[in-house]
Length: 560
Image (tube, rainbow, N blue to C red):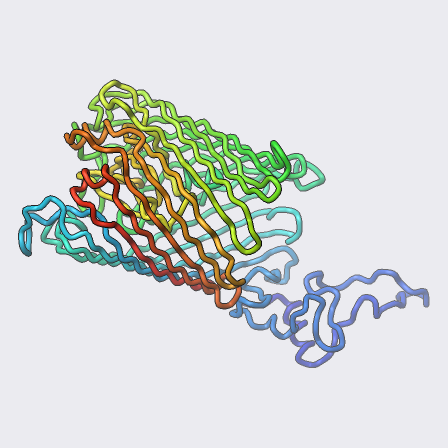
């Protein structure tokens, strides 16, 4: 990348130990001997020039600007200085390398056919290992004054390469064809982000603005990602008003299909449209707290679809397995902020709509379900104490034509233990569907979170717990916590499994995690996490085992 001329001039001056003329040093007017109060300088990005020791007012040695591959100091490749001799055109190059390893025990069907010994037990060896390598590069070109005003326009592209290696102990797990064995390696490439942003205009002298984005873009519809959190093909109108007291978004997504094993976007339409509209109000109902009102619409009319491993995901391979159309609406209010030293996050959502042919109910059903979540925390110097709870309504009669189990569109909630929680992070299979999907607490009995339909005939969830978050040092953070999990209703499970008297207790889980940043920046981050789920009576009856379920993970993240 060629550096801007004024940067080259600054570097040359530093190498020659010749300070650039400062405006205050040129006090004589070109006509006459009267001193001048102001003098133009050649670039505001290097103002006000150099002091005699070669240090500018930002505190960096000026010759460090000449090292564009050093992310720790100002350089052209990180958007610190304009390019191509302009004053407002910037380029930001970012690269990320992520390496993760996960070791886990999840209920797994036994391999009763194919190579190897045949087992008469329904559930087999539960141990699995997953290794993921991901490399992404973001090219971000934008025009902006780099002050309080938003960007005028932006073009952003993020290609991603991912290698996924899965190693299990039972055949028929990584692929429906038992001859595929017990190990799978996938190499996937995707254009995970590709968007154009345009600043339509300012609405007030306080830089209240309106802008539009289009392309493959990321969007989280609320504070914690309870309903929709994804990067997908769509368009978004966003802005603010009244000195940034109000923020708003209207987004439309024509969803792309996801790769089964990597979760990356594919250039294939999914036959699903999502509309989200939300508005945020700062300092309401009290200072330090932000309240959000939102509306979501999900129109999922996907036809017959098999995943990349040969499994049927739509319609779900249970019950009648007939093509269905899910049309759902979500009305929500959420908030996040603090009241003095007490931090509060709350959310409530009501879901309505219809499923034309629910696979468990075996008929058309009307959706009427709710979700509520609350987290309260308090800071003691370097330690935060958190208490949290979640309720997702369950269906109490899967045959009555009403679907009362809550399900989301594509959720990824950062709540309770988050990705350190076993119940939230693991795909727990149950016959042809998942009891839970990766990244979601909801026991929704979906065939796949990314490729299947939302399912509102499910058992629902009660969750209660607490955690401690520690800032041990500026480089080292940690958390430890526990949750108690309980089905809201078990009628769906008893009907689906043809298993009477399923207890509602899922069990108790403990989780812990730590993050270490050796350079005090986000350029190098190391994560360690682990969680164990001790099954209660309900989970023991469903999976015919009381063995502890667990996972442990190691993640290394390098960012330029």
